[in-house]
Length: 543
Image (cartoon, rainbow, N blue to C red; front, top):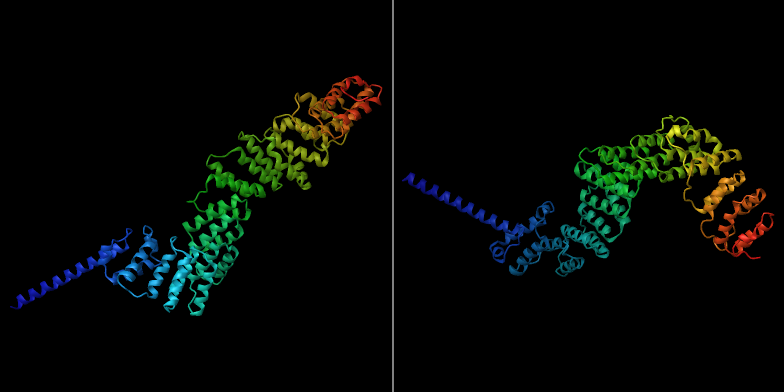
């Protein structure tokens, strides 16, 4: 009998345990249907107890677990569960229910007017606000900004002696940012950081990206530094990568240097070619030769180096006034078969004109060059022109003569033009003019002002042969109607008349075709003063 009684009690216990297990399984299934991505049906919702619905709302409101519900319409689910409790089950509105609905207002489907209505409803029911409700309201106003309403919520928290916790402070910053109050948002965030308030990384990330896109790079860099101090690993690395991209696009030197140093330390993070090119351009603009050479090295390792990359490095050395380094890069370019053309000398010319000390350094660096033909022709020409402009062409005649040995090529037309213009002695100008006529069969295209200056310098040195040659280019197009004839015209006419040089007549004929009435009158006057005058050659010349 005892064994039979024991057996019956054991069976009863097993059945009880099974029933409990079944109940738990059923409860878990009901809870699961409330928390899944697909919204529960009315039948499924009706099968859930009120306690289970409340438990689901508690889980949905958990800030730590919201990342698990990305596939769920949180706004719709909260409103569905609250509607079930209030409308179908006649639950009295409580602060918790208002907190749940206020959470839903932070969704894109929410609104600032919804926040205001909830607060008004609570006031009409004489329900005191809670900390969680106020934080939820501030979160909603961070997405749907309303400056006045946010101020009212903060005042309400003070009136009810509710603590302003870190979450609330961060939502206020985000609300100001969304309102376009960038300075206030930045100032308030810095104050929080200085006070030791722990600011979430994603909040800093939002401000960093917004400030970067708006071009507030100095402020962005302060926040990037704070962010990397608190977030090592992928998050901090990604922010540094973004800072490098933004700063290099804007040619922000300090930010580019800081972000480049941080990014290149991370072996797993390689900036894109476009970012490296922007870094190179920033280095070129600011004369940062170290940054430029490092960026060039990255592109070189990838096998994607172009002529423009070398030119940017040359610009960096020019801006830094490092002539020796510039020549070194130029020689590397030539050894690698990369051409350094005359248009690439623009930055070099500008830097040389602005620094007499750089001209002195250039003269010294040029005299240390090896006569191995490995110096780029136009780089050497640009340096010679700069030295000649400051010291006179006579100071570089030996280097000019050594050009075939230094760069393996003869001087070009534009270099000879510059040397003729900057010669102090007539003998030097005549020598250069003779070299020009012997070496340059065709003249380059240049504006009339350049030809006018060259002709005047040649006439001062009594070199009529090249002056006549250049005169054809100077008057190849129509002269401005009210402009006077170039000064060299009268001088050329007088010198031609003195030597009875017939080469003046094609020039006179051309002037007759392109000159205006007043200009023709001036030309007739100059010719009439010479015994070499031949008025019949002037078409339409007034008597």
